Image 1 (cartoon, rainbow, N blue to C red):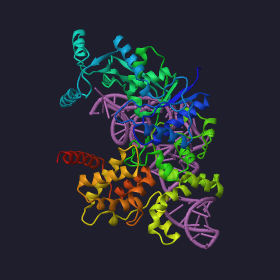
Image 2: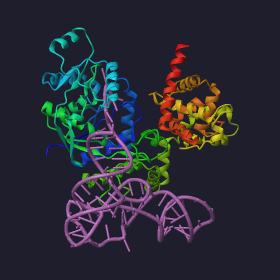
Image 3: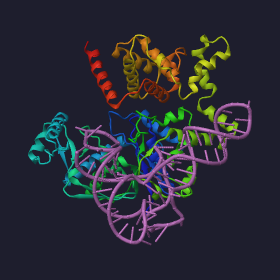
Image 4: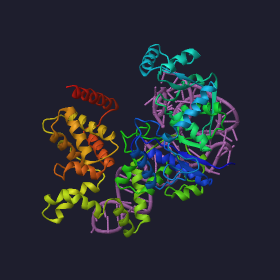
Length: 499
RNA sequence: GGCCUCAUCGUCUAGCCAGGUUCAGGACACAGGGUUUUCAACCCUGCAACACGGGUCCAAAUCCCGUUGAGGUCACCA
C-alpha cells in the first residue's frame, strides 16, 4: 500500500473548535499507526470570514492539546503552500480545465436573481437548487457577457445517474445525482469554494484517506464527481460520527463551550481533553478509559469507531481531568501546570495596577480577584437585571454582547469598550447600566476591578462562557429568540447610522 | 419537505461483523452506605438500556424487512 497521508483542513473563521481537535486526533492517530503523514491545511477561501488571527489560533490550540503535524503552513512541506489563499491560481487552472472538459460551466446569475429563483421554486414546492439556466448559454452569449465584463461563477455540471460512495465505516452509500445541486466551484471573486479546493488539494497533496465529520457525507458525491472528471484516483472516505449537544443536535457554541481555548482557560488539562475526545465514538480494545495518545496509536482499530453521534459530556470530562490531576502529578508538577496556566506573577503583575488603589492590605487582593482563576462565577439573578430594566431587555443586551464579541478576532480593552458602547447605543441603555450587568455576569459581583481590563485579561473564551451562563441564569434564549435579537440588532444599527 | 446517516442504561460505551457462554458488562452522573475532624478522593451497594413490529432460525441485542424516532444536509460558508 502506498503511503498513508491524511489531513485536517480547518477554516480560520472563528474560535478554534473542539470538533477540529476531535477530527484531527483521529487523523493523527490513523497516520501514526500506519507510519504515515499528518498534514495541516488551512482552508481560508472565504475572504469575508477568514482572518490570520483565527489561523494562528488554530495552530496554537492544536499545539496546546498535543497534536503536531508533519506538513503545514508554519513548517512547510513538499506540497506547499498549505494555505489555500496562496493557491488560488491552481484552482483557477483546474476550473478552466473543467470548463474545457465540459464538466463545468460559467454562470452569470446575480445573487438577487438566484434569490428570486429560489423563492419561486420553493413556492412551486420544488427543491431550492439551482435550475441550471446558465447551463445552455451559447458560445455567443457567453462571449458577449464576458466582453461586457459581467461577473460570473463556475458551476459543476452535475450529470444524470447515481453516485456510489465507498465509506470505510458505512459501506456503500448511494446518491442520485438528481439530488445534487450544480455547485459553485469558483466564486466571482476568483476564489474556489470548499468543494473544488478540497479535491484539488487532496489530490495534489497525495491524501490517501479523507477522515472528516459526517456532515460532509451529503456533499461527497460532488467530490467523487470531481475526482472522476479530472481522472484522479479517489482517496478512501471515512466519515466520523458527530459531537453532540446534550439535546442530541450537532455540538454548537450556543449550548456548549466549543472553543478549545475555553477548555484551556477554564483550567482543563490538555491531555485530559484529548483523551476524552479519544473516547467519543471510540473505545480501546481493552476497555481502558484513561489512555495516552501513544497507547491509542498502539492498538488503534478504525473499525471500532461507533457510528451514532456522541454527546459531549462536561461532567465526564471533568472527572477524567480530575484523574489526570491526582494520578499523574506531584504537587510540584501540578504547581508548574498552574503557573503555566494563569497562576503566575506575570499575570498578577498585570492585575495589580487595577487593584492597588482599591487595596489597603495585601489580603484584599484575592477575594476581589478570585474570579480570574475561576471557571464559573454563578451570578445572582436579581443582581443581573438593572433597576429600571426588564429581564427581557437584559437578555437582549447580554446576547448582543456575545454577538459583537464573536465578530472580533482581537480582544483588547479598546475593542471591549467599543462593543459595550455600541451595544448600549443599540438598546438605548446607559453605559453604566450595561457595565453593571457585565460586572455581575463576568465577576459574579457588583464590586470588582475595572471591567474592560478585567475582561481583557480574562480572555474572550471565559468571558463568552460567563455571558452565556448569565443568559442561562435568566432563563435562557431559544434559537428563534436569538435569531430575532440578531435581526433586531441589524435594524437598530441601520437606524443609528441613518439618524 | 427531499435525500442521506444512525438507533444498547440519563450520558460515554462493551457485546453485533463470524446468532447460543449475556434475564446484556464497564465508566460518568445520580441515590444510599463505609472511611475521613469537614469536604474531596477512595471503597461498597443500588438505580438504570437492547426504540417498536414482523420475519429467518432449535436459538436474535446480534441476520433480514418494515415502522417510528433522532441527527446531518440541501449557500458565490466550510
